[in-house]
Length: 366
Ligand SMILES: *Cc1c(COP(=O)(O)O)cnc(C)c1O
Image (tube, rainbow, N blue to C red):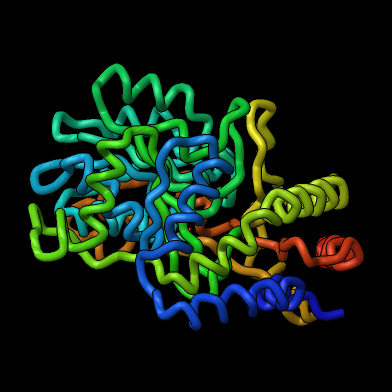
């Protein structure tokens, strides 16, 4: 039995008629940029998140970059980010002209640790980016307190976590701004690139709308340097078709994760920590295994695809050289060496999960 790591076209196959009609509608309208589909998508995503403002942009990376710029973060500023995340989290800080300061994961976990955030603090720090990695919400209360006490902006990187909740609220609405990605593999995926920022402050949203459109205040007036980061109307139309299905898809991911959890009990897999006060949307199902590479090779031999997110923590990336490489962040390094992402997506069958579980057991009994 082959188990693929992604089946990106499955959602298209399921919603083919609605998506085709939505795309055709945009094509026939002749309005391909910054028009009615964008406005409607922003409103619908805002209602879903329970937040006043959503600004659609071209990618999750731009969502982070523009959040930082709109908050006035730039040269001479520093931003605390987890080292164990996708490169773009820290890259956005550099694109804004600021410097990342890397924090470690909590012991035995994949998300950022308050104590390491405290260690990374300096008087130049203006913001913290909390990443809800793999769709599992960060335990935000202590980070919120840390930021409030020092007047720091808390930005949430929700690229992997659209729909996840912390203490009854959707992630993205707990800090000053939340950044989302609609890259095709994400829980809500476009058929190309896309992103969004949510916030509760209309002035911040207005600033974000200017920044995504060349700092424009009217057709030919520009009050500041922005970028071109508009979401295509075709992508907005596709996302509008998919959004009403997201909760159902996320619930299916949760059920599959539960099946893995039960199946993998009493194996040498260390399972992702659960949390009573949050709901994960399991963008990935990540385990820690002492023989990760051998297990991965064994699963590949048996036609089961897996992935490693991420084999190199940001503080060890050559792009962030210049001294930060001297840092030692042992949890991030342990995760990079031992985490394995097992296939999980709404269209995957229970039988596929059971098959993966039985292969893990077969490997361990070797
Ligand atoms: C995907 C991702 C991003 C970047 O989003 P893009 O849309 O690819 O630019 C940022 N942060 C995290 C954690 C991601 O997973």
